[in-house]
Image 1: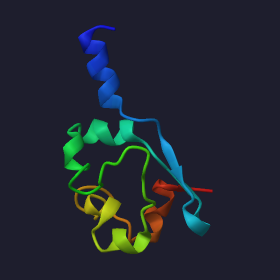
Image 2: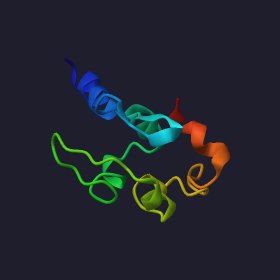
Image 3: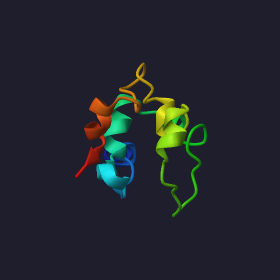
Length: 94
């Protein structure tokens, strides 16, 4: 693989993963979609989300509403917020 192809493969990040999401429906997180908005991994990892191989925690709405976890960016300013009912379906899919 050429160096440029390796770099592109690394930018894509891990495969999408899904959280249960409660009664509103499951939530699928896309590294690729988020990296396209902000390609610097360390903006999220180590600052907002700890990096531990093979481990991940499920974000909680209460944390997000306080500006933690996904709510660090999904605050209504940097990205759509997590407090408005109309925005729920942007992440949750039944």
